Length: 124
Length: 387
Ligand code: FES
Image 1 (cartoon, rainbow over the protein chains, first blue to last red):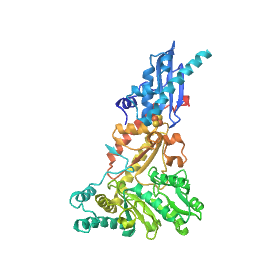
Image 2 (tube, protein in one colour):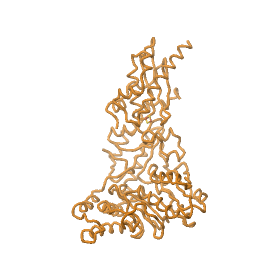
Image 3 (spheres, rainbow over the protein chains, first blue to last red):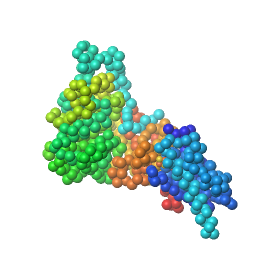
Image 4 (cartoon, rainbow over the protein chains, first blue to last red):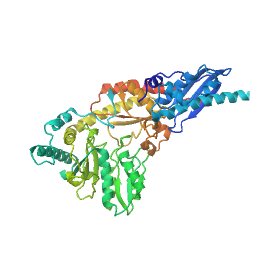
């Protein structure tokens, strides 16, 4: 039921783990099935230098988290904020319809981490 | 491939397939036809009826062939209610039934019946006292499964059914997970109705039966010809019925030896997993359980991700995680046992059968701990900083 790309990112997820002293952290939960994702960002001059994740969830949740980190690395925060869950799913050659909601976790994870970064920046 | 999902379905025994083959092309007659070919088929299905009846301690005319366990459950419940609805409108079942029972009761609720869903304790067992308290003068049917497909827990059907019997209430049990696995004697259990399915005990898919105790009222749900003593119309699935007969014959002869073998493998698996993987739990380990089933809860890891990783290694199992369910709801059985959603999320079910070997179990013990370790590394849980 999953595409080759989904299986690949699930089997060998890229950028797993935490970042020491991250510039932004986003923790989001999936209200549909109860899964959780944490996104960590290293940001320099509004450009995402590094992105890592930790996910508790299904194959699609892990694969979309992995793909999301790949997509945002090197992007400005403005560009990263534009990435939709559909874009993440498309980059993985699609998801089964019942699994589309899992990609929302990835989109929201990115947005929450950037929000956190902007918040911290304001406070400084 | 290492198949460990026998509670979902089993491969056909070779002898079952051999017994079925002549009934496709040579002995293809319609059992309702009066000439030789028809009577040959008729005799074959009657032989199966006899064999199944003997196996469960029933009479031949008390066995109704159906298209499987789901139809048998639907027929038992809807058929009884249609026949008895003038006597009352209260029904009792449990919160851990298979969907082929639960969904029928849910639809009956919409039609105006009152349904009590009995709770279970944290080991997944029903309490006869709770049933006793739920019985009302208007209760017309009680339906409780004999063993649960997810946990393997065996319910005290004899005690439960005797409560129904003293009040003259029809008692149905879904024996889909027990038929061919443990000895069943309907008189001893005291049930009026019992459902079973052939593909759970090395028979073909698409065939099952309903035991209907003589004198128990039942309205047919499929109408047409005079088949099955007018309780279930439709030309009999002769090859499948013959296959189910053969599977029953094999079970009668070999069940005991297999039970010992499979139980040993299951216990080796559980002990191995418990000793190598931290923070896991075997559900209902202390309760009376089917010898082949092991439902494991792995903390901080989601079930589908374990299932897929096992599949990469050629090991086939199932999970009660919300992510695997299609409806995105976690196992209703684990929730009924009082486990929270997050814990139910990390469930993985191993169900073994007679074709499994010690090498296969060793292989699982080799790879599964590594899979859990890998997934725990990806998980944000179990690491104090983020909680
Ligand atoms: S995260 Fe639960 S279904 Fe994908």
